[in-house]
Amino acid sequence: MKRGYPFAIIEKLVKTLAGEVMSDKIKVLDIDIDNCTAKEAMKETMEYLKSEPVSVIEMVTVEGLMQMDELPELKENMQEFDLVLAGDKTILEAADITDRKFLQETEGHLFLKMFMRYLHKNHKRIYLLVETEEEGQEFYDYLQRYYSGLQIIGLAKVSARNRADDMLVNAIHGGEVDCIFAALSAPLQEDFIMKNRSLLDARVFIGLGKESLPVKKAGLGQSRIGQFLIRRIFKKEIEKRKRSEPNQFSPAK
Image: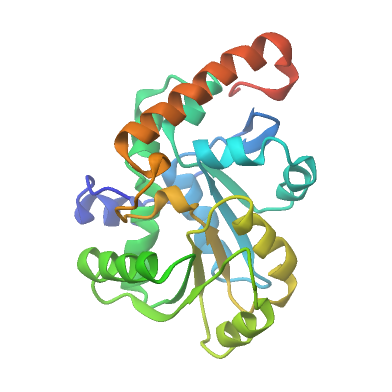
């Protein structure tokens, strides 16, 4: 979630959402992704905040798509999510999207910035889910630094081992939460929401993916070189699949 769009521009976009219509979906590695602008996604999300039960938004990443590629049941369950957005322009390029503005919005995480600004201005209450204490602290510090005043009313670790989903769900219930931000790796993030969706007392669940965390993490996948290599592997896999399994892709209409 890099900075790049001034708050004044983001605020103006939030105020001009009326009349936007959701676009068609694209398909990448057999996963349906909503082909919509940041303004269109914001309009949908603002409606989700007014309704029950919890609505699920998934920000799919290159690494997440690769992790989920061998999990057909998970792909099928993701069709029940309310909004699935590309979190990396490389994913859009895989669907042959060339619109520069759309690619720029995705690369700059404009939707997330607009949504954070909206949550801040409207005094919404958020809950953070991470995998480690370090990630949690740095995520919290980041939000306090760039979105000072956000009401962060809880933060919890979720791990693949020794999960205590029932205790976490109870903690969220006690916080009158508007939005849950999950920055978890795939498929942990998707498994958590699919198993607990009917139990969560919140308006919106946003799965950011671990790679979207504004945290400096060790390991190949989290370095700039690592991200470059992952994208390169992804692109090569996309090229191969388009030749052998074209049904796993559909371009924007």
